Length: 135
Image (cartoon, rainbow, N blue to C red):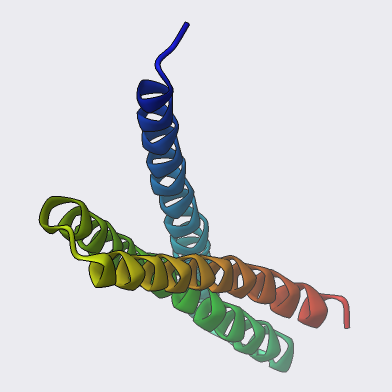
């Protein structure tokens, strides 16, 4: 039978690992979309003649690019909150400060909210380009 404290430590490690991988995925998702759109826009801009249709496509791509860039930035900002959340938890455990645990919880909640905003930003970028393509 597994010791409950050992099991809790393993579950906590798995939780942190899952969060880390999720943040990496958000950064790759939004960052990859930024790179793809930048390449697409560069290809269109390389044409000698840009007609009105191309202009509107580039304009829609730029709007989506902004959403993807915000999403990438939010995923990086989430790492900041995750780091300081873990530092607060460690301070609470090592120094026995209950307030540090509360601060860590607040920072963790802010980080989770920012991660959700990052995912929503990706969705808004996709819907932005999709909405302009369906017109």
